[in-house]
Image (cartoon, rainbow, N blue to C red; front, top):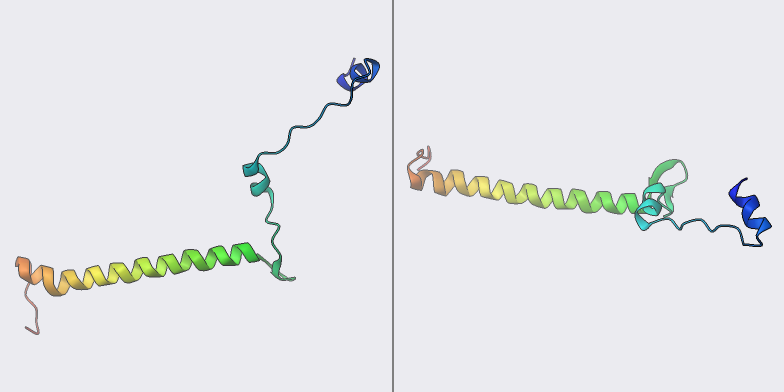
Length: 86
């Protein structure tokens, strides 16, 4: 005998489904509006892309500054190499 039939014969209400967890609900779809109807990008995806690329740009700038300081000042001061212009 099935669960639904047994519950109806005993006068019990239908069994309630478990609510989805937040991670499962977020993984299924992005409900934000699309940038354009023909473009498969949503507003949240575009905002995330901008934030990630901005962070990457700042990391690249910091790495370039560290590299420049190393080549220009730290290397010659430590005696690793000499500068051609100095």
